[in-house]
Every structure is written in structure tokens, then in C-alpha cells.
Image 1 (tube, rainbow, N blue to C red):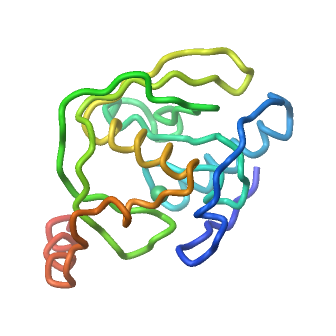
Image 2: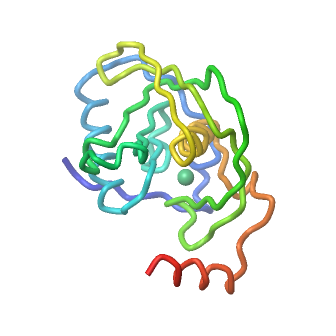
Image 3: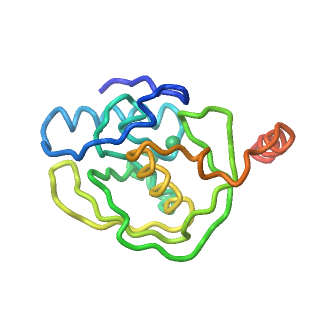
Length: 169
Ligand code: ZN
């Protein structure tokens, strides 16, 4: 496994459309393993392949509803993911490893069901509430070249960011 560089806003690859994964081979597994390592090192909650420079429809998301598991075991791999149903609404803070230091207020569904394939090509469905649902939407947006900053009602001010950092400590 190896860490990969996280592409940041301004890099045009983040605005491109990713192609479906068709080969569930060692190359894909290496990409996913590297994405896992990169996500854990960055202490993030989700990562999409284009964020590490690969225009393929693969994302990983931390299922933060499963706090009893180790971070490594909370990771869900979603290949060719598609949102099949969503309901409710949540409005809250959102950030992105590709837009460091910036947080915005974004409205997302409260509950999301995703149909995807695993790393071997088997289809499955994953459900998420709250932060996990937000993450599913955010990461799938990356596959279509969208960043959360486009969807944010507003970006947090430096004062609000300071407040947020204080609350975290
Ligand atoms: Zn992101």
C-alpha cells in the first residue's frame, strides 16, 4: 500500500466526469488499498478516486454510525455507486480533503440508499443516515466533477471556523 497525493481545488481533474469501473482486478484493489491508507492518514470521512487523480467511479466512505468498529473496519468501498433512494433533509457543515480549511453549509438528504459493487464486482446496497448519508452524496458528486463548494448555501467565516475549532478541542 502507498499513500497517494490528494488533488486540491484548482486542479482540473476534480471537475471531470469519471468513467465506470469495468475491470475488478489487482489494479483496482491497489487503488482502493491506497485510497484507504490515504483517507486514514488524512483523518477524513470519505475519498473519491478522482481526488487521487484517477477518473474512475470508485469511492470509499467511513460508516461513522459504526463507532464500535476500528476506523479501518468502518470503511465501505463503493464501486460504480448510484443513489437509488433518499429521504429527509439535513442542513449542516461540510468540508473536503480537496478544499482544505474551507467549510460550508450544505443541505443533503438525511437518509440515502446506494447500490454499488464491491471490489470483486458483486452488487450490494448500503444505507446511511446523517453524516454517512452526507458522505455518500458528497463522494458520488466527486465522480461527476462536483465539489461541495458549488452546493454550499454559504461558506463559514473565519470567526465561525475559529469557533468550530474551539468546540473540537
Ligand atoms: Zn470531497
